[in-house]
Amino acid sequence: MEKKHVTYADAGVDVDEGARAVDAIKAAVAETNRPEVIGGLGGFGSCFSLKGYKDMEDPVLVSGTDGVGTKLAIAQLLDRHDTVGQDLVAMCVDDIVPLGAEPLFFLDYVAIGKLRAEHVAEIVKGIAEGCKMSGCALVGGEMAEHPGVMKADDYDLAGFVVGVVDRPKMIGPSKVKLGDAIIGLPSSGIHSNGYSLVRKVAIEGKTVEELETPIPELGESLADAVMRPTTIYAGKLMNVLRAGAPIHAMAHITGGGITENLNRALPKDLDAVVDRGGEDGPAWDVPPIIGYCVKAAGLTPDEAYKTFNMGVGMSLLCAQDDVDEVCELLEGEGLNPFVMGEVTEGTGKVVYR
Image 1: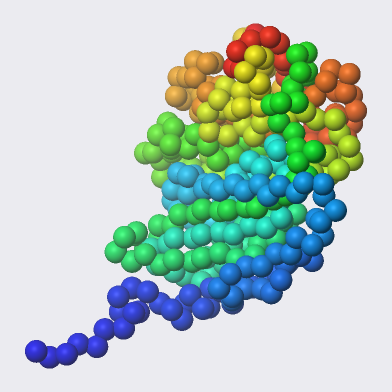
Image 2 (image 1 turned 90 degrees about the vertical axis):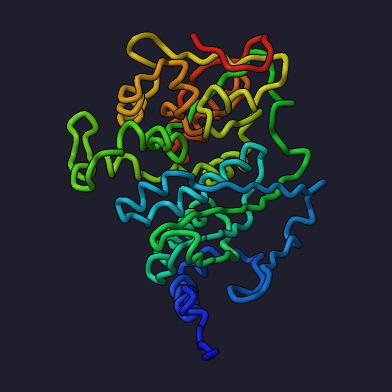
């Protein structure tokens, strides 16, 4: 038999392009460095010193992992990849700050059908920007080329964050009391949840040109509205916590909406009563794109509040007497808080009035 010469590149994996991609992201990654980072890109493992936290009474590491989900399918359709990295970071760091944890470092995983350095660099630069916004270092990651498993332009993202909190300063359900106020922080839009429904009722069947055309009721195009990046709250909320804000608990409003996330901040004997309002909707602003998708899907209010964030990206719980202090600190960070309900006796669920 005649021997064949088949290189890794012939099999669909371009090692040289991978090296070029790493070079393309080095500057963006370096901008996220913290003093605790040891070394840089290129090692087999990433090192982070905890020496600066030895004065904590009982330091606890807090970790989280997540992805962006089917929002990536819209990014690929529109060929917009500069903000999905911020989405990835937001989904991770804002899951650990509800414990009072400061995000320390972040790692990403990019799986792609055919690696193109400029394409991956655009994605990773978004991740680096998200890390800068949340105050954590991007210390490493992985770019995996999957020819034959994924289509050339397909990719998926996953992220992993580690943070730290002093156990006596941890917040959560155990600190929530009867009568506590519930404060909401505005979302920028759909964020990164509910996109399988969004695609079905608002994206499928439309051309890219149609998606890029402004819609009067939205005040922008569908493309701009659905690709708006997820708000990152962690960095600003850490500033508020360091300032001594008497916050009892937080809830990151992600998949499952307010109904299935706010309850995670409650003890089993208390309910969160949310003022959903009447026919005109809640007292806070719901982004037009969410109303558009709710209408397009024909969702009932109960279904909508269990699917989308409905304009609330993060909820905080504190004593009624502390609302003014907490809101003043939040406003100082530009977070525009609003009171959305209160804590009553119950069974650990979210109810609406």
